[in-house]
Image (cartoon, rainbow, N blue to C red):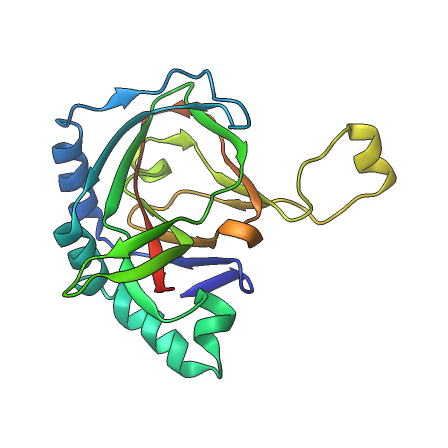
Length: 217
């Protein structure tokens, strides 16, 4: 794990190999993806991309248990005192079975927004009341595969109201995370979510698998 911002942003390089990412893209592009309208609901950010969504507990469990992700997260919890509450927000159960697939073509982007936390029943016998605490983004493409743009950018100080205000009281620089094929990006969401955006893709395609880290309520 690489901690880009303590308690907020973590990356895991090469969670998937390049070859595996290529096979996933070949499969995912055959799914019936739906293009967002680009006209947001009241209070939502503008998003223009193609997406597919499915509840798939088996896939979520394999992504959690068969990639090294589980070992990394649980080892991180064991490495520091009170780590579950301080970092992940509680006793980690696994990944949200609600899996979302995103494809960004040239001209597609996701404007500045916050990710909300959601309550759910985590699959099991019996099911466990859970909530999501961190967003998981798994990048399947990058500049190495021809994708230009599409960086995920975080704004530590929130939205900039005007250039004049920014000059008068400069804050921390935005944190830009470039795409890496097979890299997993985890960032805290819910009440403590940082304002962030998916920059416009100008060439190629950006493919992302999205889920969330779930903890017991």
